[in-house]
Length: 156
Image (cartoon, rainbow, N blue to C red; front, side, top):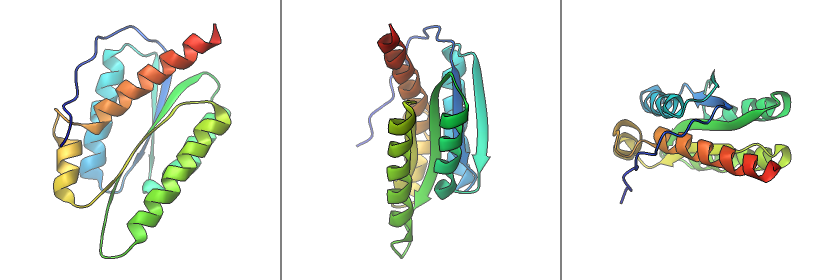
Protein backbone atom coordinates (compact mmCIF):
# COMPACT_ATOMS: atom_id res chain seq x y z
CA UNK A 1 0.00 0.00 0.00
CA UNK A 2 1.31 3.43 -0.91
CA UNK A 3 1.84 5.93 1.85
CA UNK A 4 0.37 9.38 1.22
CA UNK A 5 3.04 12.07 1.08
CA UNK A 6 2.54 14.60 3.84
CA UNK A 7 3.15 18.26 2.99
CA UNK A 8 6.18 19.67 4.76
CA UNK A 9 6.44 23.10 6.28
CA UNK A 10 8.46 25.26 3.95
CA UNK A 11 11.56 26.08 5.90
CA UNK A 12 13.92 28.40 4.10
CA UNK A 13 16.80 26.19 3.13
CA UNK A 14 19.05 27.90 0.61
CA UNK A 15 21.41 25.31 -0.70
CA UNK A 16 22.20 24.03 -4.14
CA UNK A 17 20.60 20.87 -5.50
CA UNK A 18 21.06 18.81 -8.64
CA UNK A 19 18.52 16.50 -10.24
CA UNK A 20 19.68 13.80 -12.65
CA UNK A 21 16.67 12.48 -14.54
CA UNK A 22 16.32 9.78 -17.17
CA UNK A 23 14.60 10.55 -20.47
CA UNK A 24 13.49 6.91 -20.79
CA UNK A 25 9.91 6.36 -19.62
CA UNK A 26 9.58 10.13 -19.88
CA UNK A 27 5.90 10.30 -18.98
CA UNK A 28 6.65 9.03 -15.49
CA UNK A 29 10.07 10.59 -14.95
CA UNK A 30 8.91 14.02 -16.14
CA UNK A 31 6.08 13.95 -13.60
CA UNK A 32 8.54 13.11 -10.80
CA UNK A 33 10.88 15.85 -12.04
CA UNK A 34 8.12 18.48 -11.98
CA UNK A 35 7.10 17.44 -8.48
CA UNK A 36 10.69 17.45 -7.17
CA UNK A 37 11.38 20.90 -8.61
CA UNK A 38 8.15 22.29 -7.14
CA UNK A 39 8.99 20.92 -3.69
CA UNK A 40 12.52 22.35 -3.79
CA UNK A 41 11.27 25.78 -4.90
CA UNK A 42 8.68 25.71 -2.08
CA UNK A 43 11.60 25.23 0.31
CA UNK A 44 13.27 28.34 -1.11
CA UNK A 45 16.47 26.65 -2.29
CA UNK A 46 19.17 28.77 -3.91
CA UNK A 47 19.58 26.76 -7.09
CA UNK A 48 18.44 23.65 -8.91
CA UNK A 49 20.52 22.16 -11.71
CA UNK A 50 18.72 19.68 -13.98
CA UNK A 51 20.68 17.16 -16.03
CA UNK A 52 18.86 14.78 -18.37
CA UNK A 53 20.40 11.45 -19.39
CA UNK A 54 19.18 8.79 -21.86
CA UNK A 55 18.24 6.10 -19.33
CA UNK A 56 18.56 4.91 -15.74
CA UNK A 57 21.87 3.17 -16.37
CA UNK A 58 23.49 6.51 -17.25
CA UNK A 59 22.43 8.28 -14.05
CA UNK A 60 25.34 7.17 -11.81
CA UNK A 61 28.15 8.53 -13.99
CA UNK A 62 26.56 11.99 -14.00
CA UNK A 63 25.84 11.81 -10.26
CA UNK A 64 29.47 10.90 -9.63
CA UNK A 65 30.75 13.77 -11.76
CA UNK A 66 28.50 16.20 -9.90
CA UNK A 67 29.56 14.86 -6.50
CA UNK A 68 33.22 15.13 -7.47
CA UNK A 69 33.23 18.52 -9.21
CA UNK A 70 30.47 20.58 -7.56
CA UNK A 71 31.65 21.73 -4.14
CA UNK A 72 28.86 22.95 -1.92
CA UNK A 73 26.20 20.79 -3.55
CA UNK A 74 23.58 20.07 -0.88
CA UNK A 75 22.22 16.87 -2.49
CA UNK A 76 21.79 15.04 -5.78
CA UNK A 77 18.36 13.64 -6.62
CA UNK A 78 18.31 10.76 -9.11
CA UNK A 79 15.04 10.06 -10.93
CA UNK A 80 14.26 7.20 -13.26
CA UNK A 81 11.72 4.49 -14.00
CA UNK A 82 12.65 0.96 -15.00
CA UNK A 83 9.76 -1.31 -16.01
CA UNK A 84 10.29 -5.05 -15.78
CA UNK A 85 9.93 -6.94 -19.00
CA UNK A 86 10.11 -10.59 -19.99
CA UNK A 87 13.83 -10.85 -19.15
CA UNK A 88 16.08 -10.12 -16.17
CA UNK A 89 17.63 -7.10 -17.92
CA UNK A 90 15.64 -4.59 -15.82
CA UNK A 91 16.74 -6.25 -12.58
CA UNK A 92 20.40 -6.06 -13.65
CA UNK A 93 20.06 -2.36 -14.44
CA UNK A 94 18.28 -1.73 -11.14
CA UNK A 95 20.94 -3.53 -9.12
CA UNK A 96 23.79 -1.76 -10.91
CA UNK A 97 22.24 1.69 -10.41
CA UNK A 98 21.45 0.94 -6.76
CA UNK A 99 25.00 -0.15 -5.99
CA UNK A 100 26.60 2.73 -7.88
CA UNK A 101 24.49 5.44 -6.23
CA UNK A 102 25.27 4.10 -2.76
CA UNK A 103 29.01 4.09 -3.52
CA UNK A 104 28.89 7.68 -4.82
CA UNK A 105 27.28 9.09 -1.70
CA UNK A 106 29.64 7.23 0.60
CA UNK A 107 32.76 8.18 -1.35
CA UNK A 108 31.89 11.86 -1.73
CA UNK A 109 29.76 12.47 1.40
CA UNK A 110 27.01 14.10 -0.65
CA UNK A 111 23.46 12.81 -0.22
CA UNK A 112 22.41 10.92 -3.35
CA UNK A 113 18.66 10.44 -3.27
CA UNK A 114 17.71 7.24 -5.07
CA UNK A 115 14.37 7.42 -6.84
CA UNK A 116 15.24 5.18 -9.75
CA UNK A 117 12.20 2.99 -9.46
CA UNK A 118 12.18 -0.65 -10.57
CA UNK A 119 8.50 -1.39 -11.13
CA UNK A 120 6.50 -4.33 -12.36
CA UNK A 121 4.19 -2.46 -14.72
CA UNK A 122 2.75 0.85 -15.87
CA UNK A 123 -0.01 0.74 -13.25
CA UNK A 124 2.65 0.87 -10.52
CA UNK A 125 4.45 3.65 -12.39
CA UNK A 126 1.24 5.68 -12.64
CA UNK A 127 0.53 5.27 -8.92
CA UNK A 128 4.04 6.34 -7.89
CA UNK A 129 4.75 9.02 -10.47
CA UNK A 130 1.51 10.54 -11.76
CA UNK A 131 -0.60 10.67 -8.60
CA UNK A 132 0.22 13.91 -6.72
CA UNK A 133 -0.67 12.26 -3.40
CA UNK A 134 2.05 9.63 -3.83
CA UNK A 135 4.53 11.23 -6.23
CA UNK A 136 8.01 9.91 -5.55
CA UNK A 137 9.53 13.13 -6.94
CA UNK A 138 8.02 15.08 -4.06
CA UNK A 139 9.26 12.46 -1.63
CA UNK A 140 12.75 12.57 -3.16
CA UNK A 141 12.95 16.35 -2.77
CA UNK A 142 11.77 16.14 0.85
CA UNK A 143 14.45 13.54 1.56
CA UNK A 144 17.11 15.67 -0.13
CA UNK A 145 16.16 18.69 1.97
CA UNK A 146 16.18 16.62 5.16
CA UNK A 147 19.58 15.08 4.41
CA UNK A 148 21.06 18.46 3.52
CA UNK A 149 19.93 19.74 6.93
CA UNK A 150 21.38 16.70 8.71
CA UNK A 151 24.78 17.02 7.06
CA UNK A 152 24.83 20.78 7.64
CA UNK A 153 24.13 20.22 11.35
CA UNK A 154 27.11 17.83 11.54
CA UNK A 155 29.49 20.54 10.31
CA UNK A 156 29.01 22.56 13.51
